[in-house]
Image (tube, rainbow over all chains, first blue to last red; front, side):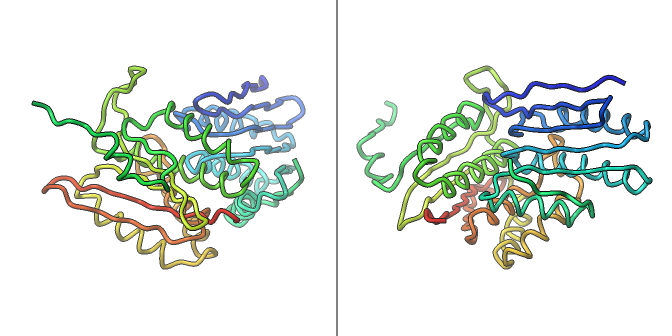
Length: 126
Length: 183
């Protein structure tokens, strides 16, 4: 399968940068997420990840989002759910979330995702 | 003869505490405008201005989803929700007000939701947000359905909601969020 690369933009809406590497299994989401059509954007990511999960290869999800709105947060949850299911199926997964350690609101968001999905999310500086 | 618009009177009505006011389609151009405004505050009050912008995005999105007054915006985008927003500063707080016309059929759900939000502490609000995020989206745009909860979490203050009935079909919804500037 091919890697998925989307260049992020900060214009009227904010598109995150996507770099999902089919070879290494390192999948990175960075930048800011506030989109006009959130579902349309994240559906592509979800489909790619579901395909990748068929390979059985290990995956590392790296998130470096400095901002996302609540509509995006729903889609991010869907992605984390896929990773958790993959782990439950016996695959090797790592989730690293990089954020500004002074951003208490963001740290709480990450803790809530950890609670919600049961995934271990490593909180790291940006 | 058309009614004359008196901007002096309008200014007096808004008062000095109002920093920004807008009425019209809530679209990407308005979002940009508020982004520029809050970015100017970023150096001096990074936390409060970031919260202010995040809250604005959530409430702006609610207006674009739920306002029953809809127009084609200046860029030709049809079906854009119309609303009113005000950003003010009062007693060491940013005050953000968002208003729009809603269907009377939405009044009860909104009132119940707001009362529930205001009855919860932060830990329980986060729990409520996680529960609501797990439910299917209520609109076809994939809306989070958790914007108001998020606004309450970020502000750390109760939501001040006022609903005024206009006629047997519609009401005007006004939501005021207060953010302490030193936060």
